[in-house]
Each structure stands twice: as structure tokens, then as C-alpha cells.
Image (cartoon, rainbow, N blue to C red; front, side):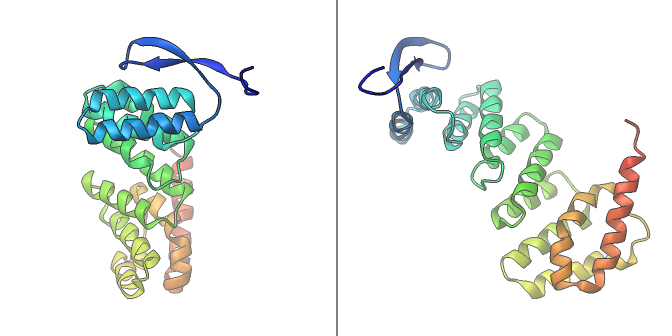
Length: 227
């Protein structure tokens, strides 16, 4: 006990591998001080020391997702791929629905040539926060980058237009998808069909029946896949 606070010994980092001293810490404000110092070092052009400070901040307090996100971005820039990936996953686990968090993990995954994993992360984030235009913009960009199904891209664009108040554009895009003209459903658009149901009920109720039928077809098709 020190000055009425319970303290623990945590590593103070000189670089990503070497622990040079221990320091006593108590409350998260100590971590935020290190985080601010990392930002100052980064602005001065010292990325290596900024990363060390971010890692120190993360050791002091692991409940603030922007710290491992910042460290992940720095680690990626310095070529520490495994560290960047680990920190990106840690940040995402803390705040999967925060629009400011998933992008760094997605960036790392693309740099590691894992586009399917990047798309999965974007979908998981969007499932948590489906009404975020920022999340939708990221997801739509990933779909386009990986060459996703045209209808999936169109549905994502329509949802984004609807959230941002561009209802005429959203309705026109829904019409171009042609849900009522689809006899079968490609599995690649199943996620976007499910995500689009609330928007369809609002903007295109005539297409909702067809969309529900296709979503049911998706569930049936998935249940028949080998396990």
C-alpha cells in the first residue's frame, strides 16, 4: 500500500523487447500520461520511442482501446508485424463497436495479405454497430477492395445513404439490386441482406418480403454446408 493506493509492479519499456526498470503504478491516469508522451514523441518524429511509451501505457492500463490501437499502428509502421497484429486484436476486443478502432486491425490484415480476415473483422464490427456511417464506409471500401459481390456492395451503399439521409439515392440503389427478381441467393450477399432488413422495411417495404425469403434461403444453405 502506498499513499492509500494499492500498487503493482509493471514493466517500463525502453523498446519493444527490453524491460529496463519497474515502476509502481496505481490509477489509469498514469497510463494516459504515458500515452500523451507517446503522442508528443510521435509528433517529434521519434516513432520508436513513441511505440515504447504506448507499450508502457498499455502495461499500466489495459482498459482503453485507443492505446493498443495507436501502438498497433506504430508497430506496423516500424515493421513489427506480429506485435501490430496482436495489439490490433487487443484493441478490437476492447471496443469492437467503436468506429475509431477496427480500421487499424483491418489495415494490418491487409498488409499481411489476409483480406478475408479483414472482411470478417469489418463484418463483426458492423454487427455490433450497424448504424455507424463510418463503419459502413469502411466495410463498403473493403468489399470493393476485395472484389466482393456487386449486390453486397450496392446494399452496403444503400444502407450508408439511408443513414446519412440520402433516401432517394438509397431507394434507387435498392431498386437496382432487384431483390424481387432473384430466384436464388449467393452466399456472398447473405450478411448484407440481413443487415439491410431494417432499412428495407423503412424505405422499400415492397422488397421486404423478397428479402426475408432470401435471408431464409441463406440460413438453409448455410445449414447444409459440411461441418
